[in-house]
Length: 246
Length: 223
Image (tube, each protein chain N blue to C red):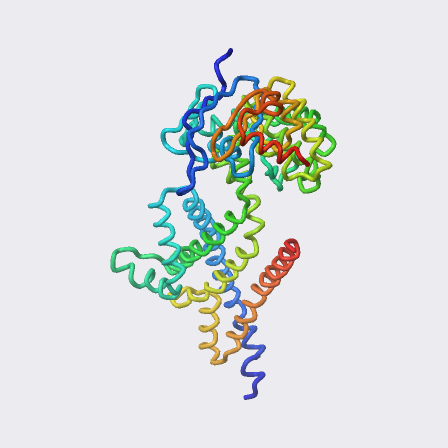
């Protein structure tokens, strides 16, 4: 097996007296699609927000992405340029057209020319099925379309890994499918993906490995078959029963 | 002498009008310089407060509190009459601009801070996640959105600065008010003062209406 792309060791995060993450150890391989599931407040969003240091973590914790340590300081923007993120609430820039949203970071961070950035942006918008709306503003798009633009915006940086923080949780039910379809296509291209999600069907179908978290710790990890069909832990069984029952 | 020829004496007004116009130019000069310098100062202070450590933060907060508390007239008199004792001699124009800018920067900094803080956290996070530096996060993402929010309060601040330029007459600055009081003394008739008041109104009323309209539009957009 290749060297892991992301190495997390003893990751601890606290909010005052509340311990959000209890010393997590995790390695994510190049090209792996990892789905993180678990109840609300289990620390799964906090975990992936630590990977690009949107959440600062405790001393003694250690995260590296492609060998570069993730920590506050001058190198942080460099790490972040290699780690794409898609948010629950899209977070598109409302004062820019869809096209400019996708072009901004390649121009500013990668120092790409306007023309090259525009070409790449149009290609990516085509890939996520938004090419017709390229010159509209985000407010004129549906939630599903906005989230697909956000995926294109993250991809424009050609990141080594894409983090998804509950990408379909803020969407109307009829729009969940279109976003999951784009993510499924992506997973087939060999991009490394870490996906925090409540979509168990997606996790079962697309994930190479599923991580079940509860109470700020990884309870168990395994292939979708192992986790969904034959979980070892009581807590995993209870959680799956609760979410799959309805 | 009836009321009309006392307060609205046309020959006196005509005679003093060139003097008043000169004063208006001085008023606009002081006002525009102070407004522009205050905008720059305020923006720098607001961004410093956002991105620097606790020490600088405390200094900036101290500056803002002091200059929002001190009466402008007191500050102006200190700059013009007290600073020469330590060897700092500023012309009436620069005394007025300095005092107005110091105070305007403090108010503008608070306006910009409120504008920046009104931008959702997700915008900062999305910028950070893309690897944008603090500088580009500000210039490309945050400020263009914040400017729209702060235009009404900034315009209000401009109105206040323009009105406060009248205090410069205290330090012998030949601004609109000073010219009017001189013309009044010369003509032994208060009409030039009324004329100056009308000119202030012509200058400022449109800005007041503009702010009112903007505020109405913004509140409609929110609901």
